[in-house]
Amino acid sequence: MVNREKIEEAVRLLLEGIGEDAGREGLRETPGRVARMYEEIFAGMEASAGEHLAKTFTAENNEMIIEKDITFYSVCEHHMMPFYGKVHIGYIPDGKVAGISKLARTVEVFARRLQIQEKMTAQTADAIMEHLRPKGVIVLVEAEHMCMTMRGVKKPGSRTVTMVSRGEFEENEILKNRFLSLVR
Image 1 (cartoon, rainbow, N blue to C red):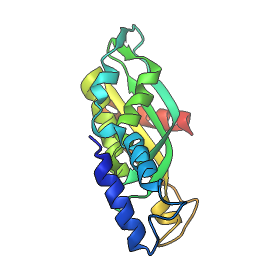
Image 2: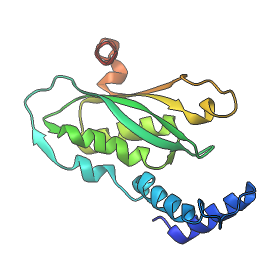
Image 3: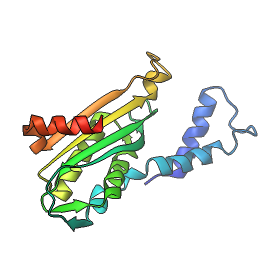
Image 4: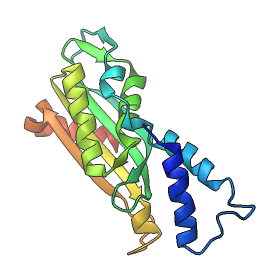
């Protein structure tokens, strides 16, 4: 759970550390604003994907279901800078499906943590496998990382792509390629 007091204290120290006056008019309320923002953007720390994937519906269809272009925003644990992009999820149900908003909510659980993209991709796939028990799942994440855009190498527009396959998607290249052609 977010500790607002500690965050506010840390922000004041950070402001002083960069040479600012934390008491000046424009910054006086900044520590509180940052604490409230962190409470929102790190809400996934206490959340469970299982909560969102618990509600399922019986489905006769065992063909691939794709939810694509799920926008997400996360914060890199290495530099505490944002990374953001799109998630594409495909799965083959085994008698039950989740409501489509539940896939986006699952992404949010993992995106709203200090995170690395590679781990977020795997966590999303593993949660779907665990809670929906489909025949297979594939998750593709495309993101721009502000730590590459604003600092260091300074390459805006570059995207990092990660993909994780589980179940039938691991074994079946034709299925994997069909998913990739549909999300592109």
